[in-house]
Image 1: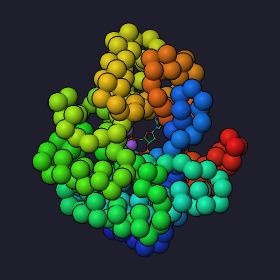
Image 2: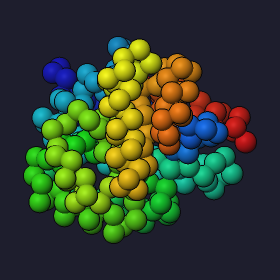
Image 3: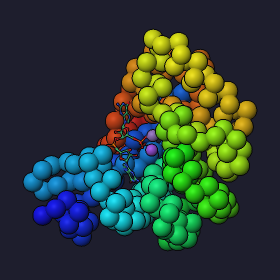
Image 4: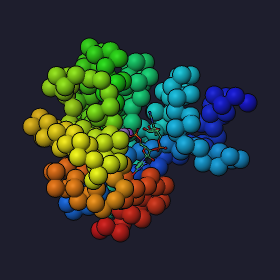
Length: 254
Ligand code: G
Ligand code: G
Ligand code: NA
Ligand code: MN
């Protein structure tokens, strides 16, 4: 069967599962939120990474259903963690370019908040600059509707897109997520440190929260702390975890 058909079947068979990767405060290392990252538990092939199927889901439009599933599932999970006393954290959900183009995203988000009763400030959406730049006026209107709902919006993979910095003041965003490629050699390449420093200063001057992704060492963490970065995420803290493992990690920090 071609992968698109298999993916369709996987959804019906509940083979998609949401994993969670913590984002922590750079000082306290307390978990402040968790990014929802989908995984495909294939009965024969084992775990398939979204890197292998998200683009197929995008091209076929299946991403709309996958996106709705991830959104609902992660909001239910955050609500459950809050209600059973595990932790009150934000969940961050990735939104693809296709979802911006085709879905009535604001309505879908509003519905999910209503059904799950998750407080709106516990939901964050991660959008990439390049997906927003595809249709600037539609994207600006959508971001306005989302921010009116009270959810937070972050620009994912920041620094890799081709957006003009002037859009930053037009988009109602709350945070910047510095792309992993700038963090990788931050302790050995002064140019990368300079770029990261500039993004942090820019973000803070616009009142945005700045988070670094792909942090893999304590040296990177120490430098990001020194540069004033707000939050970090990466293998140094934890890889994406099953909801059960994420629950364990949340309980350990209590
Ligand atoms: O978790 P991992 O590194 O394997 O993710 C690979 C890619 O898949 C990343 O770019 C990530 O943003 C994307 N991805 C993971 N889960 C989702 C999802 O629920 N929706 C969308 N649109 N992309 C996702
Ligand atoms: O595109 P997005 O930023 O959503 O991608 C998230 C992807 O990055 C996930 O697939 C996740 O597994 C991966 N990732 C998360 N932390 C690290 C890290 O510290 N190092 C590397 N190399 N990849 C990471
Ligand atoms: Na992301
Ligand atoms: Mn990213």
